[in-house]
Length: 274
Ligand code: APR
Ligand code: MG
Image (cartoon, rainbow, N blue to C red; front, side, top):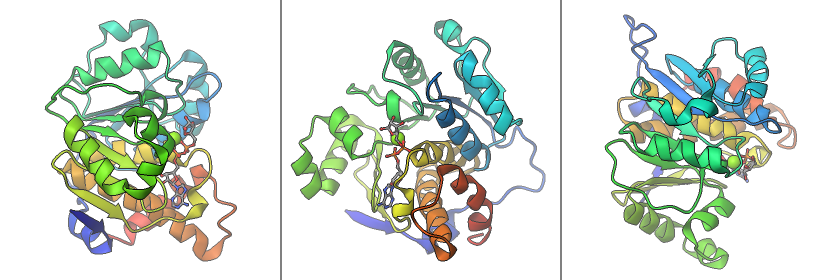
């Protein structure tokens, strides 16, 4: 069954920022993102995450990427020697784990994903962290955020088939794999492992530009930290991501938006829905 996620759903489900909160209240997220030739994806996802309600953020990345992130986001910290120490790291202290933006689907990314999936913590997988694999049952949700090309790769589905039966294919995949899938594009669909599918009602082609997916990954990660209900967090993140682009085209050409500008638009777009 397909439902739409619209403004009144967002208003009903957005969390309040508790007046007696401290940074521990909203948890620490870990994002494993960025590589030597795609450092910007780490910057974009990290800023998006910290703008989305999280308490603290740690970035797991290559040493070469760290200065870029710090320059744009002095608020974040880093896991020392992330890839060198990966197999010995513990992740219990985190509220959400995310991987993939600015990563190739290489051995290091795969080891990261395997380690994340061994935990009971919510895991968000995007870009290079998306591979064909089977998912064991976990306590926390496993959330995949493919664009159609990535979905074809991880599902083995045919392009024409996906085009004509987006909803049922996505829903079957989510139910059978026990994961949540955010299939990005015009009218992003989110399918949950219980069979529910939601269509997003915001967004426009200003978003069809490199980097906007990395921003969405950060937003989902951050929002899970400040929402009690992880499903609402995902749906609200997708909604806000599109709503920022809708805000942009009110006064500016759809050709011109840059992914990092979503992060600049979010505070006002969010405020207007509180
Ligand atoms: N209408 C509405 N939303 C759109 C549209 C459109 N016409 N086109 C794109 N979008 C939105 C999608 O819904 C999604 O949220 O823009 C975002 C694009 O995300 P990605 O396709 O993941 O793009 P991005 O990751 O930023 O750029 C390329 O993806 O293939 C990987 O690793 C590769 O780093 C590369 C990256
Ligand atoms: Mg992407």
